[in-house]
Image 1 (spheres, rainbow, N blue to C red):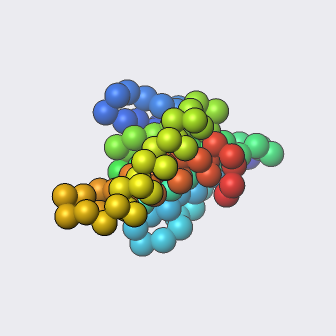
Image 2 (image 1 turned 90 degrees about the vertical axis):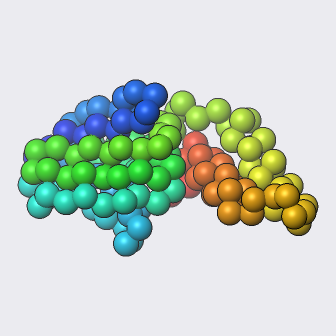
Length: 134
């Protein structure tokens, strides 16, 4: 089976690098699947899971936005934040989710609702990836 090299990189450094058969990610325009030989493109990513298929296994990486660049022989994901499923601290993600929910329920004038909503979406995404709910 043909493979394509995938790199997931954050400002803190590389998170993942391997050869995979398929990459699937949530772009702003919708779900995007990339196979070896895909046409070159760049797409902005939503908060979501990147699925990397190798043989009968699928690895998950939680990303908090960023960009996906496709070249015929390589896929590069430049993410604001990214964590492999096995590296996610579930207790920390649950605490972040609860904190964001409290901020949204407070309905105070000094709360930045957009920021709290994004924090909630990131926390839920991390929990879903850690629990493999995709």
